[in-house]
Length: 131
Image (cartoon, rainbow, N blue to C red; front, side, top):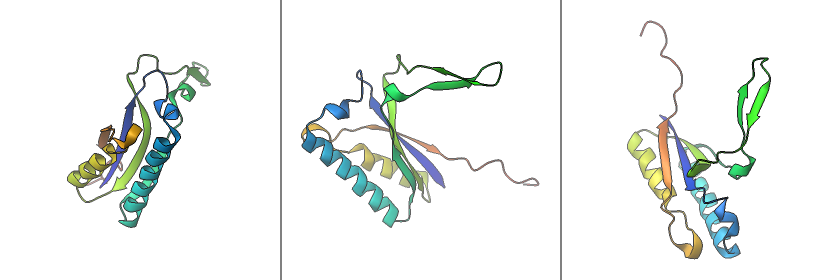
C-alpha cells in the first residue's frame, strides 16, 4: 500500500529553517538525505521532496474563461507543508513508524523537532468493474 507522509511545520512568519545556524541547517539536511537513502535501500521509498517556502505558494483555480486565477499565500495558516515522502509499505503501522522517525529530524542545537507528519493512504483509483 502506498502512503504519503506530509511534513508540516509552524509558519511563524516565514520559513524558519533558513534562519538557523549553518551547522544546524546542515545537520537537518544531512538527516533528511540519510533518511531518504535508508527508505530507498529498504525498497520503501517511492518519492520524496522538500518544498519551497510558503511565500512562493499560490492558490490557483480556473476563472470563468478557464484561464488560471491566482491568489497569494496562505496568511491564516498556522502550519505549512514543508515536504513529503511517498512510501510503499505493507501496512499502515509501518507508515506510522516511518512518520515517527521523520518527526525526530534535528532542529537548532540538534534537538528533535517532533514535527507533525500527516499520513494518508494514496488511492490508486476505483476498483475494477465486477468486484
